[in-house]
Length: 244
Image 1: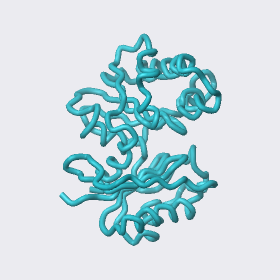
Image 2 (image 1 turned 60 degrees about the vertical axis):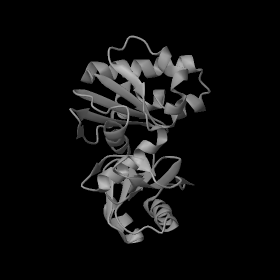
Image 3 (image 1 turned 135 degrees about the vertical axis):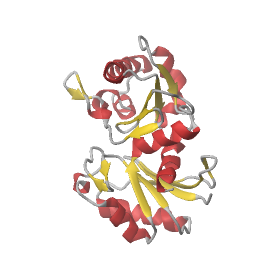
Image 4 (image 1 turned 120 degrees about the horizontal axis):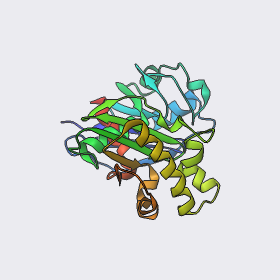
């Protein structure tokens, strides 16, 4: 199986690397370029073009987007510029790169990678992947089948979007102790458990590298909670999987 280029658009950085889809591994060093601010469509598309050109890439390209993506049209844009709403992202990225492009929600991509190659391999029943970063992304799987565009980071807890209370960005901005932040994550996960009764919850995003600082502090959950095995590469790998 030929490699596919995966590009992961985040609130702070746009990461790219070619992916070996038989192993779920990056085949070259990951390249990260800062997300432009404001993150308007043309500016983000220019970074995507640079990433494709930087790898001298020809062939399929999978791209994640931090929002709801339906038939490659962007429907929500919580952590990028609102001008993305109703943009046909496949058309935009295809035009600037000249390559065949597939666009998928960022957390859905990370979840695809984790269920095929990472912490969710072989898990039956309901699996919930949550990425804690600039916001909170979510991916829901039933017996390995993705239920796309769940956006559970926006459920309301104490009158606020969950991601405004429990994302990694909130922890950093408010200089929270791990204990205090873990309490907020715990409360959020309990809400998710009441809604979905998952057998497994996978915590991804950049924070997964520091899982030992907060996962042991979580209490009262029936579901098994584990860190993402692929850490921050999951989005890139899942983007490539979507394009294949």
